[in-house]
Length: 187
Ligand code: SF4
Ligand code: SF4
Image (cartoon, rainbow, N blue to C red; front, side, top):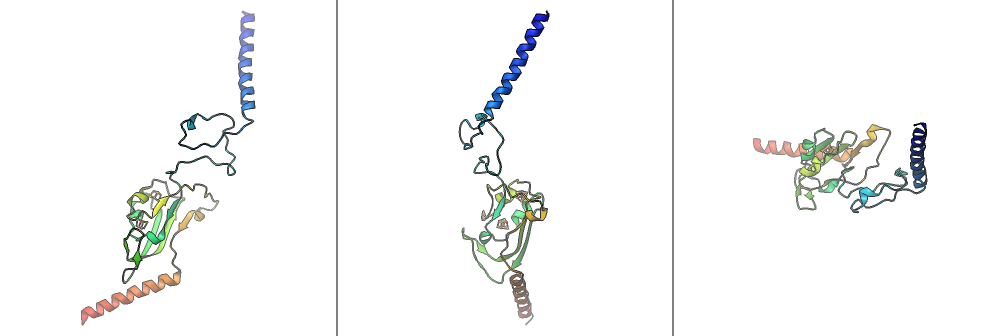
């Protein structure tokens, strides 16, 4: 009986030790980065699985939903993305133009200036709804995921390219335009 127990203990200790030695030697090489589309992507568990970020980065799918980007020249300032956002992290301020101010790359006519277009990525939950509703497909989710910061306010991204002076001028133009229209009506 004592002999059997001692033998069992010995073999159990040997099994544990062999597992430790296997991992010890396995840890001499790093896990290789592979394309997510590779058939054996989820089987590549040989070697160290710790990624030496930021020197090494895990491969991510092309359709990954990370940092939002806005091609502001293609934005018609319709506000649909802000309305669709479940956490209200898109803030848009539109200023009306007195006439068409151009076209987007898909031919949509632009009639509003984007005085403010901010996205608070600290609040964003990466649902992608804003990208789905955008009529000109100018708001997109990119593969960029490493914009970490110690200040939450650094995660508010502004996409408007208008200066304060430009905004004031465009607002003033609209007010004058409206006033002239009202005056013409009264005549
Ligand atoms: S991805 Fe979702 S949470 Fe983030 S800004 Fe778009 S709608 Fe809002
Ligand atoms: S839905 Fe698209 S076009 Fe409309 S305000 Fe948002 S980004 Fe601009």
